[in-house]
Image 1 (cartoon, rainbow, N blue to C red):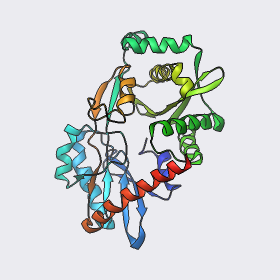
Image 2: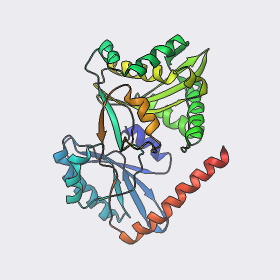
Image 3: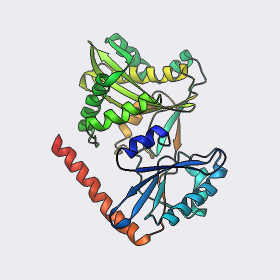
Image 4: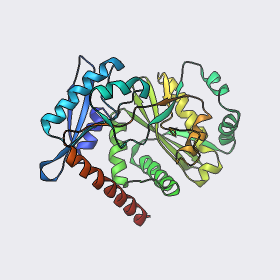
Length: 317
């Protein structure tokens, strides 16, 4: 999704400059986002790319991207493809990339194969998860596909409330209205709302990426938690993905170390794993660095900027 034309338009509206590079025929390929900085400096980011047809293509694609970064005199060019860590490590070393701070919060995930029928998938849920899905229906929860800005706003209100409760950064309604609305209009995303007594109590946005459906954003309020609405909503997302032809369902992020109960993603992981799935770990962000001195300066300045965003978020709340 983050390599799509729709995503390039979203980021260009936020001040980035988008370029698409075909690095093979037809793959590898890469959307490169450029950000101008003061004093004529720039940085580049290939979100969730480059896209390769086979891991054997990765090293040559990385070498080409590194060459582009040097030619443009970028401070650095960052990539973070959704490629398994074990399959990609050698290619990154050979192309001169180094492990770097992540932009995307998801480095590990669960993927559920959707080849079985609906009854078999439901039977494979953990016992407590099956109970919770059934309990939501008994407590009057219904799930529907959302449409229009009014429903997007309902998802945003739930998302902002969840962010306040969980302590993660949420941006303005206008930001999410433009982003979610663009992806939905392009046919890349769907929003579903779980309702109780006619009011939204949980919401989820899923991305469709080829044969994979991704559970990308989700939220619930206290009424939804009491009614087990998130369980009914996620189950509905899974079965609708299967009906729509998806072969895999990506649960959208788990801790890299699932034994660490202090990880902020541990609670969501315990919820997700009840639905099944096989863990995957991605290689994470990797940088090629044409300008070492400016790279070190940026490494100091960027965390300060992120801390300021968090402070602004706390002040707004």
